[in-house]
Length: 129
Image (cartoon, rainbow, N blue to C red):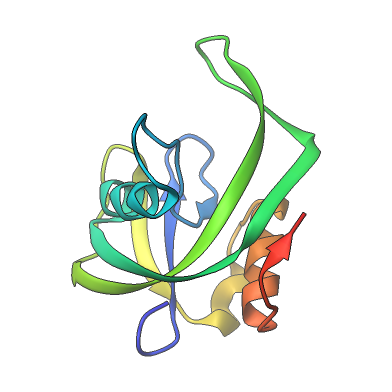
C-alpha cells in the first residue's frame, strides 16, 4: 500500500483478472526477497516488506499450467511499502496501477485474492489458513 492508502494491483495477461503481485520463490531466496523481486518484476515498483498479512491456501484451488505442471497454491502474503520505481505494463501484466480501496469492487479479481484483500482492509492481524 502506498502513502495515500492505495493498493498496488496488476492486470494479468494470462487471465485478464486483477491481482496482487506474487510469484514463485527461487532457490536460496527468503520470502521477503521473493516478494521484493516478484513485485518489481511484475509491476515495476520496488518495495520494502513491513509486515506479514498471513499464510493462505485453498485445497480446492488447483492450478494447471500449460507445461503440464499441476499444483495446489499457497501464499505467504507480506505487506510492503513502495521505495522506488513506477507502475508499468510488462510481459506478465497488461496494466499496473495503484487502486483506491473503494474502487476494488469494480475490478475482476479472483476469489482467492479477495480473502487477502478483505483481511487487509479489515485490519486483521496475521492469518494462517
